[in-house]
Length: 173
Length: 173
DNA sequence: CTAATTTATCTTCCGAGGAAAATATCTACG
DNA sequence: CGTAGATATTTTCCTCGGAAGATAAATTAG
Image 1 (cartoon, each protein chain N blue to C red):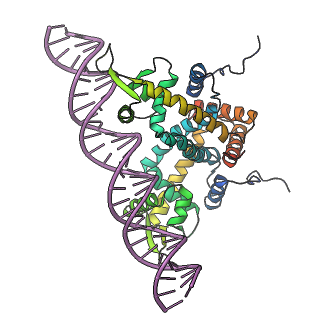
Image 2 (image 1 turned 180 degrees about the vertical axis):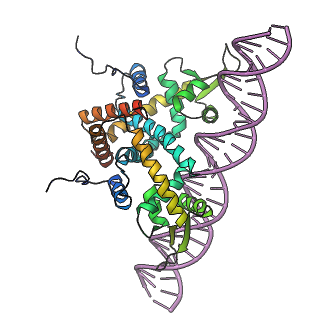
Image 3 (image 1 turned 180 degrees about the horizontal axis):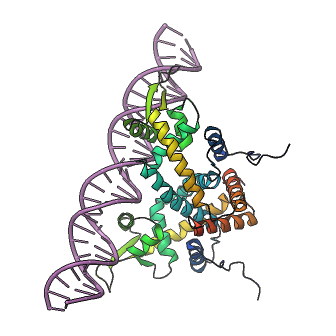
């Protein structure tokens, strides 16, 4: 008896079960895209959960970490405009304002008017902010490394390439 | 001149640029896990954005869609306890209560006491709810299909397998 | 059988971020 | 130069979901 292409893999996960339910209930639909889309969604949820634990240990939320990390990796003098931060962090301008508010209150960044454009504001890591993010990022990447430890080097590379391609072709076949 | 394993791919994306920044700023760290983790995060964001558009066209948010879809794919009689819904949708019990509140107000589900356990509540799709979710799900899977159109069948299968494996080994190497 | 514990759901309070309006400033054009 | 329209950021109001406590009912211990 030949293999059925719809046969579940040897170790089914929650997404396989969901796809199976849809096949049974709606045989007119092809739910196979969920194998990719649903897993990205679930993995994001689980990763976020685990990565947040590290941030919390330092009194940071995901949003604050993102801002600090964006400033840090931009290099000296560790400053960016609010608009730059919005572009890097994929949130609205209002959210950037509030994230920076919290970080400013905590003494991790400061704000000043831009020299050339009085509408603009320059957000800069303070010394404390730089020290903190440098420490957190170390824990963060080691945490990520640990989470990926179940995949071989080759698998990670293949996965990264496919995800890159998906991101670049999303909706543009 | 041999290839440098750190050389960026021909078509770098935002994550490649971020990893490059970290390599420059923190050469003591290995930011390569971000190639996978960072892309899952970004893809989730973009997918959520695009998938939500379909839900909005039917006056639904992601949360409401999740509940309706979970009830629908569970099969006749399209009813589950609040606890079952919590397990499937990865939110807290309070969030389930509120999602169901909204759906109940919209006449898409109804709630009744469980027969065997007076603490329990049974949430069931109404006729309108079933009709609506059946229509939305069709659009939804076609939307997902379109979003994945840039990947070949083989690439999708490989991607799905790697994501499944990652989910199953997360933090358990 | 009664009291303590556990379980299922809901309620209350709060924080994060989105949408859109409000401000302040810059740029262009007549 | 002066005003209309763009642009950068902040403010206001609102929704969603989390955390933790409240309720009510089931289960278990004695």
